[in-house]
Amino acid sequence: MNAVMDMVDEAKAMSGASGEAVRPYTTRSWAEVSQIELDPPVIVWGGFAMGVAGAIFGQGGLGKSRMALNIVRNQVLGLPFAGRQTASGPLRHLMMGSENSVHRLHNDTKRMNTGLTPGQIELLGAHVQLATLENPDDASITLADSDNLDRWRKTLEGWRPDVLWVDPWGDVLVGEANSDEDTRATIGILRRMLHKVNPEAGLVILAHARTGIRNIAQAFGYDAANF
Image (cartoon, rainbow, N blue to C red):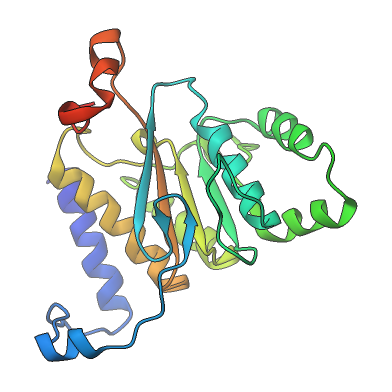
């Protein structure tokens, strides 16, 4: 049995444990969809909206983690980032990762506190939770491990974020990076766990893009998906 099938079985077990019966996909009639009253989506920043999944791609060392940390900081403080507005009202952010040590995060957050008032720093403390990798097994965040799934659930239940940031994607992904099936299955597990604690929560994934000058040249235009 491969890792993806293990994940499918895990999802089935989660459903069975909660007593949920198998239900059909959600569908609505044309008339119902056209007449339904919906609140506008909450845009966290740029193209990232609550309730959906977004991604930040870039080569290793480019600054994806610091960019994400800056977006979170500015969102909580009600400030724009890179010329784009962030969601009004501070959201609860959970930044899960396997690469940035507590020393790196201490340095980054301390620098980003520069010029802030004690009240602003307190606001950030009340709305941002970061994985600090202080224990040997903290860096193991792959969803292929059943013990990790339990730790993920307990962490999500303990904080109940409005936005979950996952960094980097490769350390969470189960299976092959170039497999659409493995990618969809992994995202599905993350979103189901997140939905159980906050149905409206957003998910943002930080992922390593292809390296090398020829590949970087594909970042824009018709070849962007390949990048």
